[in-house]
Image (tube, rainbow, N blue to C red):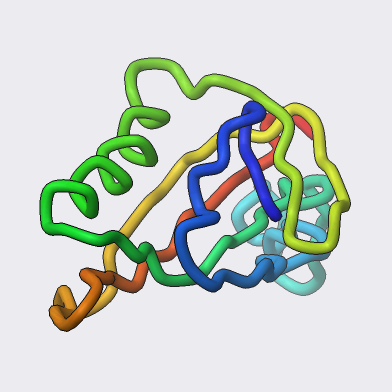
Length: 124
């Protein structure tokens, strides 16, 4: 089970953890006042972790409650917390910096919606 700030935001349905691009931020020397060729490292990219899955609820209003719980983590200055992924690995100093719902809402015996949440380790 994954969690953020000790809250089970994603446990209502299946979800997976994925890493964003990893490596160095490189800029061409031309943009740093150089004459052209070559690149300069500006440092290591911040760690991005994505949680992708499906929110599942018994009713439309319960689905809205799940959606609002995630969205409430995005307000004002990013709040840092510990992110625990589906395998039990944890990362401290993470912030929920993006959330998007993917596609339509599915209706049936249960109500569900695909989503993607983006977390970033700020100032790493």
